Length: 139
Image 1 (spheres, one colour):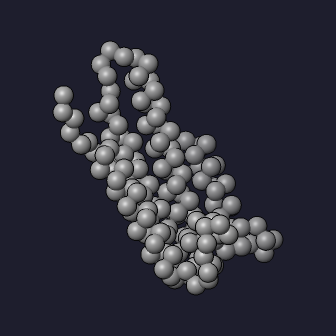
Image 2: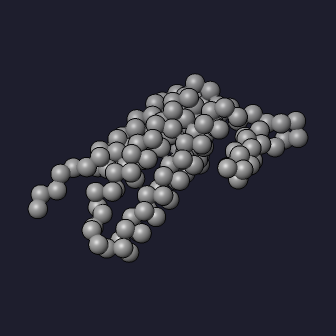
Image 3: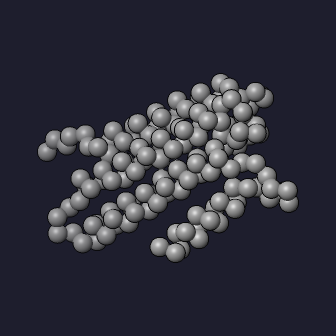
């Protein structure tokens, strides 16, 4: 049986390409010497460390997470009829994959908006994480 390329195939390829392209754009604007052995990848998205390139990295993170959601939603083509265990595992994979993509999206959003510090020295984005968590628990 010939299997056609599904939406999951294209979503996965586009997720990888999107991340690589936007990370390279952010890297090209990083003002300091950058090395994966001494820096975190998220340093590329930090507006304090990479003022001109952080927006590219954060847009890349958000776009990549959207493609990952498409990827995980597209896994439905692997469903086997009358196999309850496989269906449960497929649904769990989709649910946790979409949750991970949503968390990735939130990290890009909070990094681009809330990187500055409060007077007490705590990062301001930790306040926003608590607010988002509180909102999620109220639903």
